[in-house]
Length: 133
Image (cartoon, rainbow, N blue to C red; front, side):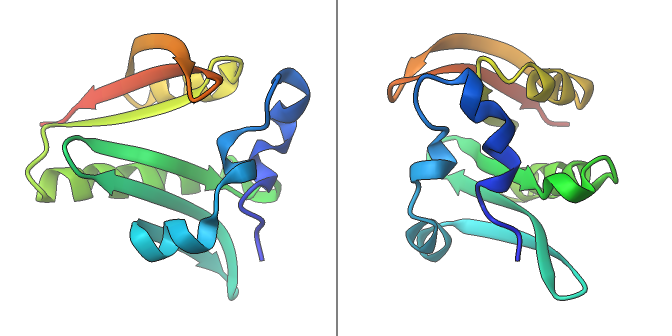
């Protein structure tokens, strides 16, 4: 089964504090939130966690590093955007570690625009949004 932290392991050496997924209680996150999982051959290979209260957040999105570059992350991203639109939101928000330049380029490629960069919860983060429609 895909570890929820494996996709973030490459960033650990570049970060002064562990990425949020390293300290998250995923049993609680899954129980309380909208969590969508991709499986291949009975194995979890990717997931997206959504938070749709006042604004629509992609709280976490990740794909097993062993099978990245197969379009699975893009499928999860499109699913999240479809969920946002179906719930009446006109934009999607997310953040990524400020040092995760690879993620930032990937989000920009998918139409997300950086809106802020700041310390949040003790972590240096880059914030993005995408307007839908």
